[in-house]
Amino acid sequence: MAGRGSSQRTVTLLLLVPFFLWLFAFLLLPAIMMLISSFRNEGGQGFTLGQYAKGLTHPLYTTAIRNSVLLSLFSAFVGIVLSVFAAYSFTTFSAKARDRMLSISNMMSNFSGVPLAFGFMVLFGTNGLLTVLFKRLGLPFLAFDLYTWKGLALVYAYFQIPVGILMIYPSLYAIRQEWKEAASLLGASAAQFWQRIGVPVLLPGIVGTFSVLFANAMGAYATAYALVTSNYNLLPIQIGSMVSGEVFPRMEMASSLAVILFVILTIALWINERMLRLARKGL
Image 1 (cartoon, rainbow, N blue to C red):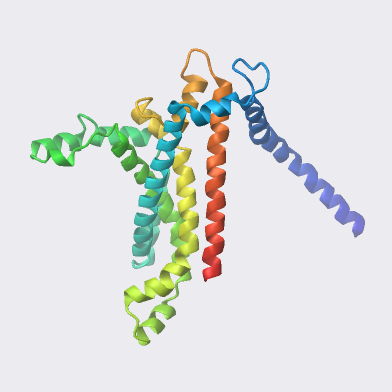
Image 2 (cartoon, rainbow, N blue to C red):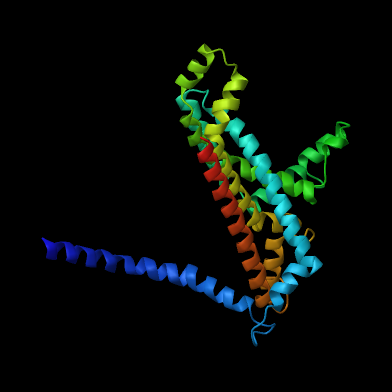
């Protein structure tokens, strides 16, 4: 029996070899090469910290970092607020209607990138359907410039909401109907129930979802590039332009900015973990 168990473990490890090779070739090796490249001079000669110094001090790159962080925070905040209310409304419908709504949310969460940008151009572009309609109805104040920060914020919030709904929806089932009935019998209003019981129970899920939405927005590239190209300074667009948008690729500078982006996301995840611990401790 001992020999059979040992042989089974050996076979299992051998079957995992292709997975580990894939993991090393497509995840670990590119990350290691990117990290090494970020410490090299322009042209790949010698090692230096100059790329990081330029990325953290040059106005072009600091503005890109600030714009990306602010846009991600705003879209994540709008996404989490709307997704909480939307997900809660799903729980009030029948099981059949709820399944349909979740299917629609799942489909919408996959509608991103270039198709999403094109859809917003058709509706809210300079000659978009709704833009022209608002102007002809004498409501030009409802139209806005899609190719600015406001337009990006709207598009980012749009693809954040379905993701937030799918992530926060399971957390709502942690709130039991018996709790609401007991709170009502004790004289608590609906607002008091959500303030004292509902929100604290949902807080870990809300914090975790907010962190995912922030990371989702920070790493978004295709939608922003298709919408504003290089007219709005964002960190992913800067990285992409250095890799494929210039005559001579600047891989070293792009690698350092990618590492800076990774550090920002790591800090965000660390803050999220700390807040989750505080929320669980409060519960």
